[in-house]
Length: 137
Image 1 (cartoon, rainbow, N blue to C red):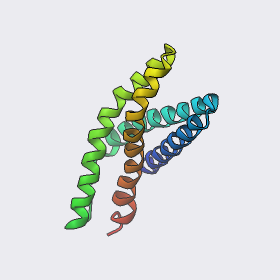
Image 2 (tube, rainbow, N blue to C red):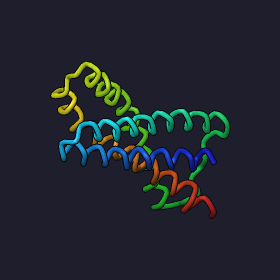
Image 3 (tube, rainbow, N blue to C red):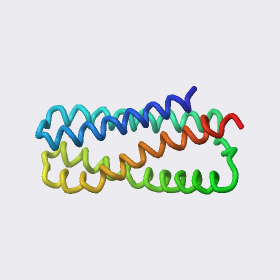
């Protein structure tokens, strides 16, 4: 159940990120802020839920073999690496907004947005591969 919750939070974050990007492009900063706070909240809740799940149940082995396993491990490795990198970037973005340094925020967000979106989407893909596609073999 916690794995599904993690996937739901990743999906929520991805949708909120894309929504926030669209809203800022349409020059709707208040709605952008709400969407981005939703993304931050979903990602923070994901991290807490993920750490709780791993502490309670440990990690799970991928049941696929051959090419499927190579693809899965490639996605997982890139997901984990970028997930570690995105945390300080998001914290910096929040700090910049808090201090009303919107130009610096926009400059950093151009790099952070695709990384964070990739991490959220691949988190969902990892869940689907691990628990849905290859979880019943």
